[in-house]
Length: 346
Image (cartoon, rainbow, N blue to C red; front, side, top):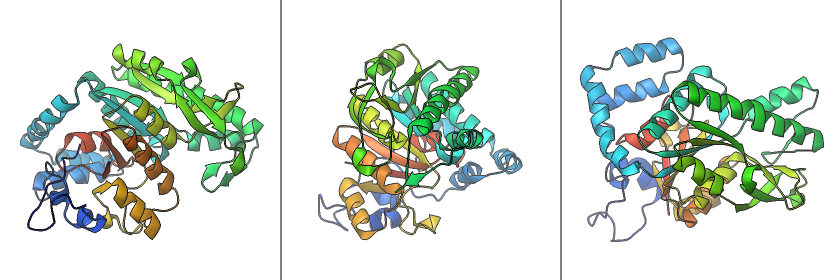
């Protein structure tokens, strides 16, 4: 949850856009409520978030003092108050779905948010699991321009894995940790309607044309976290595979969500894809379009950015791209002064 941009008369004209370079180099200027990462406590928290092996994570966590722990709670309080009763849509996928300890952390984050009054909606992919089952039945995964080519047999596996195994396992994990979850497919209640993208020649892959959020609103109003598998139907009732980033953005827009969070396998938008220190902390829609033209935003990041731009244009408060491989990255992005990813505003 980043603060609004500050107007700096000494460095820029009032109302002038902050460039991506300025956003990368001067995060304290771009985030009124997020100071530069200078404190030893912030450094320790980031070490914990980035720790990979479980032993390293435990060792890093042990370095936190009691004051650190209390300070984290105090820092989170105004954010919790701001987000109480607001909707946050989280797209979950990538490496964070494969590592059991990372998965446990993500689920814990979601349960915590729901228990303090944040209306969470979890939209998930399932690429690794789908590939595993395709291999079991002897079907070779095929991709074209980053999109899965989904013929009839592949569509059957996609629907089985996403709507069944992956979806219900996430529901079970949320409930094991004390949350309330409702597993859904985009087919349920006519939630996601789509058209087949025949012009791309990638099979039963769809583009969302309509979101009917009624079933989601009913669920969150009753304290449930909807867990949504991104399968839609066309006008003829044919099941279509939907990109999870795209579906999450459309769902966030339909719900007028406060936040859209896309969990990825990178720390955020990087000016140099090979250098994590070049992460850009905050961007506007205009900045994003400029970076696409420059080739800085490219490849698989483009559909994520497009999803962010579309939902922002339809009233979502802010969109965030974060690293799902960093422990508790959802909480750190929403409830700390510094954040961990890239925030995009309208």
